[in-house]
Picture 1: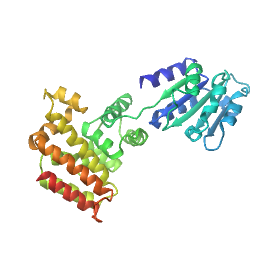
Picture 2 (picture 1 turned 180 degrees about the vertical axis):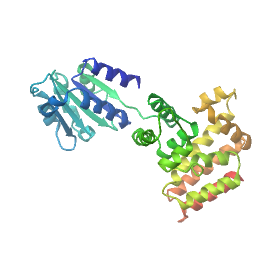
Picture 3 (picture 1 turned 90 degrees about the vertical axis):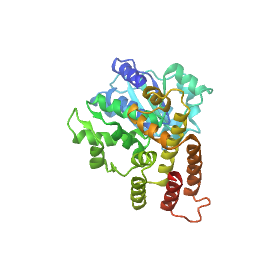
Picture 4 (picture 1 turned 120 degrees about the vertical axis):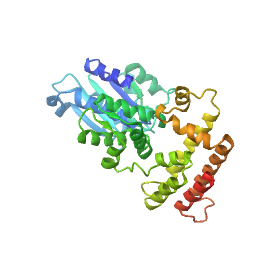
Amino acid sequence: MNEIKHIVADIKSGNIQPIYFLMGEEPYYIDKISDYIETHVLDEAEKGFNQVVMYGRDVSVEEIMSSAKRYPMMAERQVLIVKEAQDLSRTIEKLVAYAENPQPTTVLVLNYKYKKLDKRKKLHKAIAKSGLIFESKKLYDNQVADWIRRVLSGKKYQIEPKASQMLVEFLGTDLSKINNELEKLITILPKDSIISPIHIEENIGISKDFNNFELRKAIGEKNVLKSNRIINYFAENPRKNPLVMTISLLNSFFTQVLVYHGLPSKDKASVAKALGVNPYFVGDYVTAARNYPMRKVSQIIALLRDADVKSKGVGANGMPQSDILKELLFKVLH
């Protein structure tokens, strides 16, 4: 976030690089920077002749260099944006010739999503010297909830920890998807609102009572009735609740419970830091550790691995996904 703020501040102050190579696993920040350049570097009158958007699948590196070398028309600079530049990965090194001597009146932006340049090769070194390379790294699961809180805080909203966790478990770590859903909520709710699980359920369609977060909590509490109600709901709504995601989240939970068992200090702050969770959720791990000794947790992790293999069709003999989950739940709780 700080790096992005610095890039934007430089552009605002007129310190604009001739090349912006935006790469990495997380497309959200790549799009943010690219969109900012597209919107703010030229004024509306200049854009008609001096701003061009290309797509990697439609052009060659040679065509990009040719366009980048031309002079702007009645403007200080031109902006050339290459979206989906990762489609040029096999020939991208040819850009070295231009990167070593870029046109100072051109702002060349390359959106190189899901891939990275090899730091050992000439192109990376040339762009690092003459322009700017930004790597957008994917956030870990335990970082996304904090990202949601920061984004909402900047727009004068708050969110309850459970509501934030529901978004992460339903949408994963795709920041673009999460941001789209947050924008929906912001449109509906007045500023200074505290977003709750009810808001998530009513406006995004994630059940506040029947989701992986509640299943994990119910299993941790050894609440057999609630656990069975949730998995029966999952069986009736398999597309919204894929088994592979449920197994993955349960595996993460019990792996953290295993870590909890081995912690020398069990105070809330230490546990939250060691497990990478919001202190609000520490009680869930305390309860689960009390109900599942270390040996049982190890057995559960093995059961989850076995269920994961079955969910992918190995050794399941055509067993329905819902039956795999019911069998797993029975073995975990007994």
